[in-house]
Image (cartoon, rainbow, N blue to C red; front, side):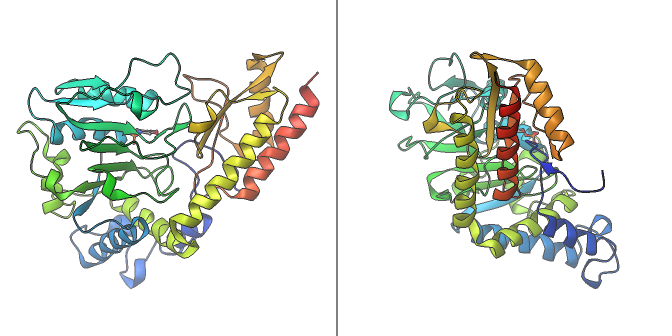
Length: 367
Ligand SMILES: Cc1ncc(COP(=O)(O)O)c(C=O)c1O
């Protein structure tokens, strides 16, 4: 294939072409340094400039208050499933987890290795809605309340930040990172793997309130210890330099494009277009997620014949879309169906192309 496809992958995902071109043009010789970012020492002045600019840009974009540290770590979102309890939960401590999908399910299982991780509500029969926070039971002894702000596989997203009173709120924002403004001060800790909305896989960003540092267990691996990382500017060891560099280019792109208010507007417009196409298809396409909590970035749906999902038609849909340059629309293996991820680099025009394709496919295949 000679042209770039429209990439609807859930991650690693689409990056802005402008960013890829900058990285390409700087590939062999970054800003007159005579070397690629891949080749430079993380202790040198060039990389220091790259990571400092990336942090400053993220602080501006998210209006991160002074009393929060920004860390650039490795280990992915999954690394944070362990890092959060190892840093915030004392021996025999308790934490409360809102399990709204596969990723928060994995997080609670990991946390339960290090203490008691109690669910905020009984196990949901299906991950298609989020119980209102008024119906949650939060253990009064819980050190923190954990949420996954957007469940990438099931496509459920919190419409607003749940009010957990004086409890520390911890959120996995891996898949909706930088897609809407966030009031950071409502959280004790936020984290995101960058490989969906912000860069190439390798770097995980942690935004943590300073008073939560220094509580890690003795058994906490050093690479997961927030205080050690903060005290050493995320570099007691080698950081994921290339990922941080490209992520910094994406931050700069977000600033140039108008910041999070603009990306929230785009995200609303793209997802509205797609959900309207699904809901307006007389049952040919169907999204199982309750409207109030539908994700703006991961849209799962089924293709139905007489109200029953047709795997055969879904396979045809994915193949036909692929043939027209729209890639990675197959649903997650645990859910099936179709999933379109609409991250920041995906445009309204590209979403429109998918919607047009859906209309044509429906016309061809509905009886
Ligand atoms: C919401 C969410 N949390 C955590 C993870 C795990 O991240 P990683 O693959 O970086 O470990 C993912 C991965 O897709 C995710 O979507």
